[in-house]
Image (cartoon, rainbow over all chains, first blue to last red; front, side, top):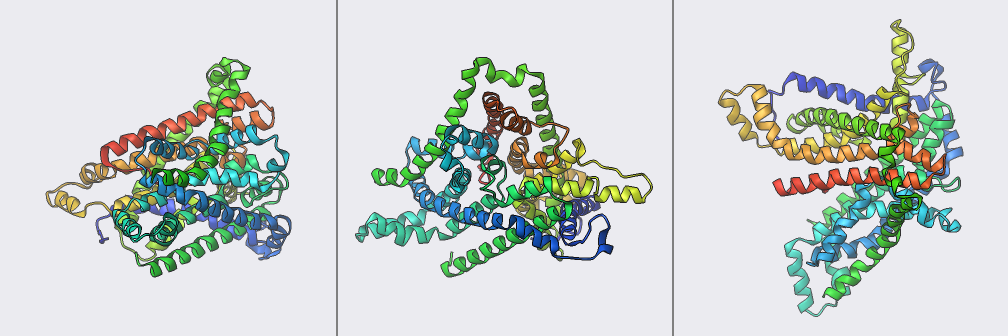
Length: 265
Length: 270
């Protein structure tokens, strides 16, 4: 990148306005979550009591959301990585068709997918009332992200040669897949997992339809608190979400960089 | 080898068939049980038609403004080196991971009855002004929701722009507007089409923001939600979901094939 001294003032001004519009609400919400009384303002003093109340009432939603995100990543790794390999290698028309179909849950609004799931499986009470129901929705929605990211990594030409070399040396498919192919696309797998995890933790459109009073995730709890609690609690809960998502993003990025370093690609 | 490949794909195919294809087929046939006319409910019932028109026009205007603002910010962030650039870019793209409900809440903090703008206008002597629960609030919420994606995409595209081309244009005496029109615009056109399609489709299906704002301006996802939960009108909810899904899928499908054919750009981000 090079410095361009001639960036017009108009563009700088617009950038400033957009930045304030994007960042001010985040700051406002963090502040509101820490104030004793929002309408009195900063004079009322700072407190952590709203945060404590949020953890008391909604604390479990944090754990469930992280758990769901983790299971969603694991599930998509198990079924998505082999599928990505198949789609990268198969020249068949069926593979192209499936690739196209797989992107539909992203192209179609989550509300439609959620309705379809409820219409089909809503009568199975145990399934409907468990977190597995939400997990299935999240997995369907995030599977294309995992498959597409990993599949394009599997398509690299040098990988074909390495695979071929291992095969002529007598390695079985399972040995090659776990010992050669998966390590070779590890950075893509990490990138896909990062995407799947953050999408799952922040998902609302599907989850609001699929949840029950006993199966609530972080975004579902947020919606509930905005509708029924005082503004300080909603803000404190938003602060909790921000802390969770920032920790997750930083943590996953650090893991990704660590793997990249050891991996050397 | 093809047997191994089939085995590799089998778990994902089975999962996808059971939890997306089969349910969606159920959704597709459900309206027919109430008569074929149910499929066209969005056209024959004036309330649903109004809701569709609201959603399409809101999404269109939001998409156009997002692209314009996103391109300007992206050009600055992609080409200008300054301290804190990376931090600013991270802050501006952080909302990509926010659920829509949070953005609705942000709009309430800005323009609600206890909002910042109400405090400011009150202090200035104009009385407490609120805009969160009407069209303005919904519009700003959708804009907030879409901007991070546009900024991220345009920043990447702008930093990859050919600087020599622009220099050549300048040294030949091109004005700023001429540079913007003849150099920036063509270079950013594929990004604009791809990104515009995603933003339009996302806005059409956005639910969380409108849900939190409980807006008086009704959009289709809210109509579908109300039909389903409040009136238990499953066939109608299904019919409206099909309409909505068809529109978003078509927009993405057409632009993807258009941009792929034109320049090899793929909607990898979808």
